[in-house]
Length: 262
Image (cartoon, rainbow, N blue to C red):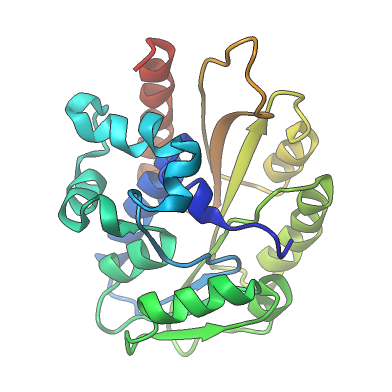
């Protein structure tokens, strides 16, 4: 959908688990000897000002990253939070900026974003990095045209808006193609957890496809809450088992923290 702009939701509870796990995956991959190719299908603008008008309109970061920065974060989040603190609230790193902070100098990054305003902001925010190629195009079809060079390890991250049920259907169609296209590549998907459980069938499909990382956290929802969202999950394929286990532990600890009202 070309109406979605993540700036209104940047730093919220859904971002917390998503970015912390992505950070863990990237830091682990950067330790390896193989060059890396990082690809995003839905990049957004890359960096966000949590004090700006968009972010403050709903104040979603207050119960997300800003709450964790007060010092009550579970174990496992420290390295990611250190980076966020260094950037300050005016420069919160979305997944593109996070990836560029963790990828080595030898890496390549290819970022897709269809929304014209978001594409322009993404180009301004991270386009000067010589490792990056930014394309204003459909990320699903564009990514499937890519192939690693030589011995590159490809890591593909998909984080669509999920504004309609069709977004889940599109990702369900794309994921098997992606796994076939990159038979040894890591594929990471962000998945919202809805109050009506609409993602359950897709979650079953991902398990059948061989996902070895399924990390999710739910938060308490007030009876008068109007949002359809009640949780966040990140699903990974071909992620190192040690990283998958740590990610799942982080998700459990985060859910426990939220259950206490923190």
